[in-house]
Image (cartoon, rainbow, N blue to C red):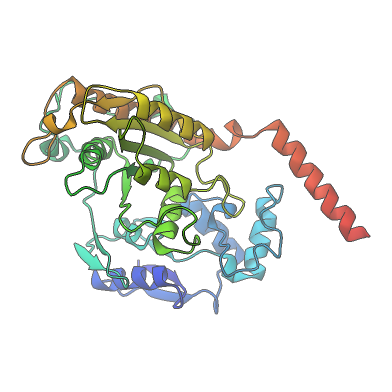
Length: 379
């Protein structure tokens, strides 16, 4: 099929996505959806293909979102779709459809996974360089070459059918990785890279946020490009892995800043609620658990499902070789354990996270808000 992109030429993310497609040799059918919006039936079909709810597709910035009261969690999917049909600017962009699937390509490099022959490197309009990644499936003959410390006999694929229901989504779990240091040789970053390789072996789609250039919380508004990138990745993810160094007995300011920029509620959507979380730490001295304990507190505050297992790597400078790969040890094996458990819990909970986080107090509050609004309109 000819690839399709629902495009807004005034959007930098949409322009970058279209440019990546063209650089990869594609000549997509470009639909400027503000001029030619999809039909209601096709929009519903797209939502199904992307495995997104209508609320997850809504755009707030530069739209009548607030004016229409769309942050009201009581509004049904049909009402949200009605709003998008009446105001196409509410449909977030860009949406890309190929014979490999459909996705809301935010960030723009997400389009790589939808292309058969993606360009290996691409420079965005702001100068950021992004790279395509190979499809990381459970092909042991390929993936284990990247995991030299793994015992191939004992590394078991996830039994997905033991964890999900018949109608649960079966797309690869989407995991966002955050690390907490900007050092040139950052051991939290190296540990996160080891974990990312393992997560990909288990079939996950993994994105890592680079905190370079992220401003301090409250030093600027949320429209900063790095803040927007982080928030879009948080909304995209279904689980997270946080890896922080321990500095002065605590998590680093780099780690905390990333978490602080992710709001509890964003446009009526809670970007972290009900999602899974694994925590890891590295330290320069003896083994400590201060940082993972603090990360657990933050995860609970963000309403995340934090898995029981965790990893703490002491004297991290002794655990990596000259090629920046982690040595084989019980510490490495624990990271494998953490990744395996994170993947299992993500498969287990993501199909029912909406039900798991449906709370009595919020239902009462939402009903009262609706009642107050109706009464005000009747005055």
